[in-house]
Amino acid sequence: VAFTQPYFSSGLGILSHTKELTLVDRVRPFLSKTFFYGVFFLLTLLGLVGSLVWLCERGTNSEQFPKGPSGLANGMWFAIVTMTTVGYGDKCPTSSSGRVLAAVWMMITTLTFSTLTAGIATALTLSSLNAAEITSPEALRNKRVAVVTGTTSAEAARHFGATGLNCDSLEQAIERLTDASVDAVVFDHPALNHYIQTNPKDQLRLARSTFESQNYGFALPIGSARQHRYNVALLKLSESGELQAIEDRWLGFGHE
Image 1 (cartoon, rainbow, N blue to C red):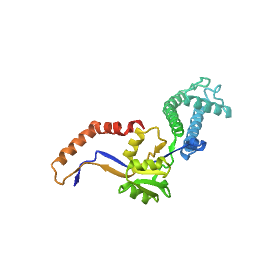
Image 2: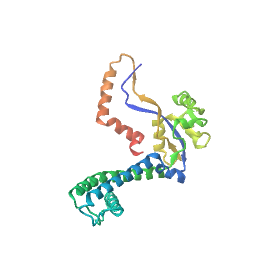
Image 3: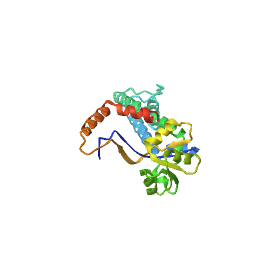
Image 4: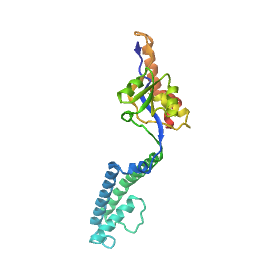
């Protein structure tokens, strides 16, 4: 047979029980190296800007930014209140160079602080959501996994070192997971996602990652005159956004 252009791309997914998050799981996003590097960079930038403001102001505005450690501390204070958009107004540069530096710092911090706030909010949201017990194919090793006989999922489970339990259908495999006979179900990600969307009360969770990528297309006889027409029609549906709308309607991708 000959295949048309793919109308959908996906892969295999892993369905497992919901993992109750501990306190350590909830604070883990704030214990990563990336988070500490970001904090270190921000503190370094605050120190640099505060020092530059002090250098610009200590000669002409010694009352607010005096020479010595106290003036440097005032420069740091000005950089902090400006970044957080608090702006008490107790310290304010008066020199031209100081005001230009302050204006640039205000524009930079408007973007930086809003991005930082959004990142913290996202991390808090994700840390409050219950996750799947098995989140990657590597975690399948030595696990009991239900698969549908004769599918690519059965071969993939064996490849990653899982103990496969062959089932006649996806429904039977999910029943094995529900009654705790297995630790996970491996099957096509779209089918598992559709099950989750239509059975939200089940205490099951689908791993976000997919593996063993697969493209879905229509199979036609080799040399069929319909192949070109189907390809053109699928490309038009893709460009118009209709294919994405169909995915959202059936699989709920827009509501994950």
